[in-house]
Image (tube, rainbow over all chains, first blue to last red; front, side, top):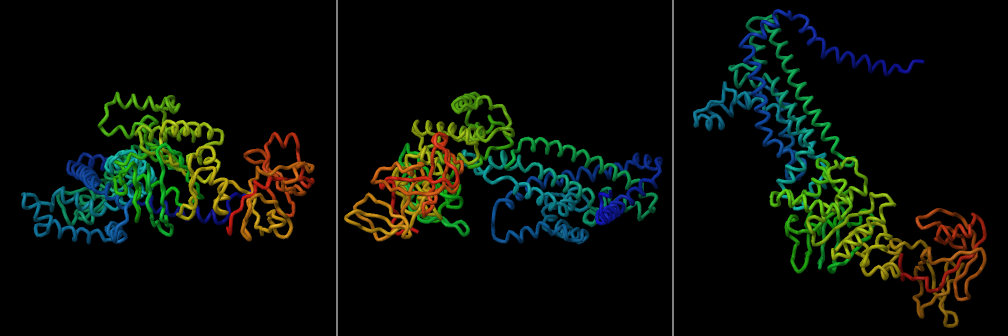
Length: 269
Length: 352
């Protein structure tokens, strides 16, 4: 007897097509990249530098902004205030903006004529064409992922646990660090990984702020526009491999953390 | 002494309305009410988790209405205990002491001592994940008692534990109260009040509708709602008539109850406790008792034994113990006699 009806088959075919659409270009790129070319590119100092720059700048941007974004997410999860929905809309704005437009907007802010740019210049620091500028561009487009995920995490922490801690004499900050933060950790880590990943893959906003030093997406574009597809492909493959390794490690770390937290949670919370 | 003066608080559509209470030191106060009646909100106001819109809260001569929750020293045990899932039992109990003011040795000493008092020493190193309801409750109590609260607030403490553990918890709460701790315990179950309270309040729709010692509240409820909450199951709307200087109550022109008081209003609601009604296969009552012949309609096991529904023109609910039922079993549709003394008849005047 056939356990699957026509609808199940249609679902299966549609799902396979979507998966194929996602996998085929990547697979094609891997197949068309020769092993020799791949290793030559991997040994290329310029490529290595750009991948390293991408990884550390995105990580630094995520880490730096998380220190403010995570408490902000708690505020959004717990407090009601006037124009809260407007604030929520502003947070989501970078997701819907064309990223080159975001880059232009940010450039106006951090260039020598901009507010932040002027302040930086006053202390002899230039943000444009600098890793700091790249970090700002990455953070601008990727912050919503961290804030939204952390906010959902805090909202899922039963408020009565925080109330119980207050009742036991704990200060608001102690409640935040000992109850809210550890219990929302899973969502915060997920948001952190998402923001980091989004920052690493950013091209549009970064290329406006800093063509040099080149992050990996800019380098791939540069090689493609200067030398063509065959020259850009090994660098792209290498960057994808590095990104996959980094995300797998982060995922594994957050999964092990998730298991630990789940073990500690009781059914009702 | 805790004094609530005209406390009002609006919470969405719900409103705590002009609550006034005085609770002396050492009292075991049970606040009865159904869910949504405002009992938890009242506890949260006393604990300082929320502030009243108007009114004042005084504790031991001090106005604590606007005092910070951390400085009130009022312990609150939540209905689901609110045990911190990211800490061990030890971590939970020690939480209030872990703010840097106490040394490790002192913390360990206090936690060990309170855990021994509550019989949970063996749980200290455990993760809270696999604890039973009773164990979680003891942990929650230990975590609160370690702060030496001036007042202990309990939100439905028996709601999430097995019936077999309830007596044990009641003994523990009684002991704490005897040691001088003032306790406010909110519940929807009048039996908890019967076994624990030295004073009882009944709250309905954000207003305290009756308050007093348990005997008064349970024997003389002011209205049908309180009567229901006090365990009354038999309600009869009656008209009172005086025949030859003896008062009788007439119910639906069918039943006539002999009454014991010297005067009655024109009409009212007559209420009877199920366990005040005797049941027998034959008429064995004394002449002054109210005695009716009826038919057994339903026999159901109850917490105390057996509840027998008897149709004697009106429906009567009779509670008897399991032992009594064993000695004299009844069957559905069998003919029985029910009787109760006139003193068991309580009248609620003009109550709906």
